[in-house]
Image (cartoon, rainbow, N blue to C red; front, side, top):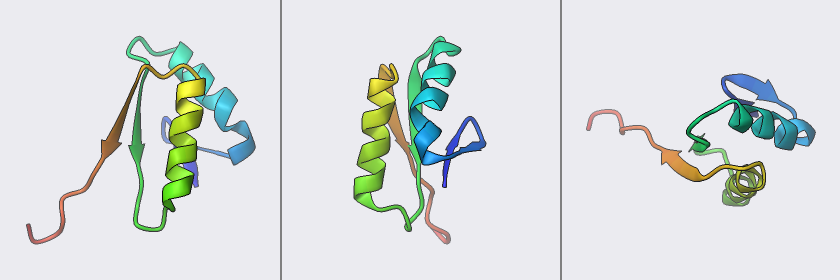
Length: 68
């Protein structure tokens, strides 16, 4: 599942969804937040699509381990 601004987006609509979101944003920054089920290749593809859609910056969000 891929979400853009908290809305689920089908993979074939990722480019237009990211392009529209980035055009509406002053920062042009994308944050990738995944879980352990996300394959590295899929994450890299999403980052590539974000750059093509006009992202000027990309960040990776992490979660603190429980009990830490």
